[in-house]
Amino acid sequence: MDLLPVAPIETLRQRRSAKWRFHPHDVLPLPVAEMDFDLAPPIQEALRAAVERSDTGYPAPVPTLADALVGFAGERWGWEIDPAAVTAVADVGVGVVELLRVLVRPADPVVICPPVYPPFFGWIPEAGGRVHEVPLRDGRLDLAGLERAFATHPAAFLLCNPHNPVGRVHSRDELTEIVRLATAYGVPVISDEIHAPLVPPGATFTPILTIPGAAAIAVSLVSTSKAWNLAGLKCATLVTASPAMAAVTDRLPPDTPWRVGHFGVLASVAAYTEGVGWLDRLLATLDDRRALLGRLLAERLPEVSWTPPEATFLAWLDCSAIGAGAAPRDLFFEKGRVALEPGPRFGAAGDGHVRLNFGTSAEILEAAVDRMAAARGSL
Ligand SMILES: Cc1ncc(COP(=O)(O)O)c(C=O)c1O
Image (cartoon, rainbow, N blue to C red; front, side):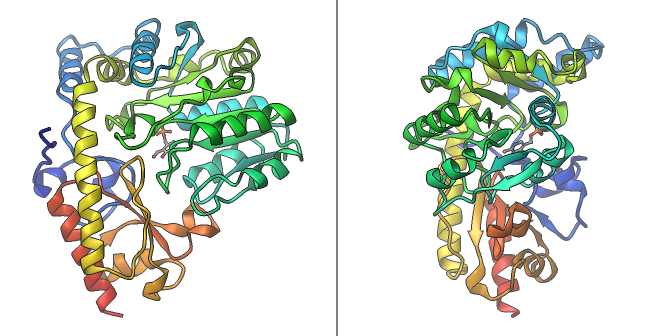
């Protein structure tokens, strides 16, 4: 399969998005989860056509967005979604916070499994709750720890599947056990499945709502924003599969779907209906970059250890053997001029780690590892 090209770095530097604007020009940016590939052609076409029509009004996500997601999820994952059970939300963060506002009473605990996507630590207090951590064990869900936490009757469990930053795709057996425990202890599960389309052959993504019994207790959030690089267009979807969980989403602010980006809806429909071939090329390209990163680290930074992720374009690198303290990110930034996400942002288990975004060209990846190796050599 043809791999996806990446524009030269001078062209990438013209982008106005966070990844390319947050750092001085001499820094190679590999932190925030945006990718450097060109947009999928059907998405470019959909957006260009909208501009040509001066079609920049309010979003109309019903029925097109729901129908497009239903088609994609059925084909890709064998997940049957009722289009009437799909709610458009501006982004996954908005979806999670609004759900938590419904589920959480002041200072209720909400369970998360660090190291995990840093905004989880902020979304919970934003909705009035309190973070209850059940850290991953050896990169996997700690089912016994989760049972102990669920026994205290938290307001919700915020699951990340596939898991950012470790890239683990939770297995059907693990999810079955999560559903059993959540049902037994009456804990609603919010499953953040934003990275789901980014699972290449070799791992199998299981939507939580395909687990028997999950419908009564779980809500899923899916989006095109990571896999097709559409984060700036503000469109995601919340999916339920039972009257009980629909009753939760019915309590969201009635204007929630009006707050979605119109271009996000148009681009997401194009992604789900015409962007699947491009997605498969992306997965092949990311597989190539993941293997390249492994070779580069083994050659040039052998002290760094990692488990290649089963999904996503994010690599969770354990740099503790380098001896740069809790935040090796500072060494790589200051001495190597390469920007990575600092591990401690993902929770205490992130000390000594960085998260590297390999959704880029082979040249940029190689230059980044070279710069990291030079920074390490300066110690
Ligand atoms: C696990 C996870 N959830 C949510 C988000 C943010 O999604 P959104 O921009 O739709 O809020 C990200 C972004 O990288 C993520 O990795």
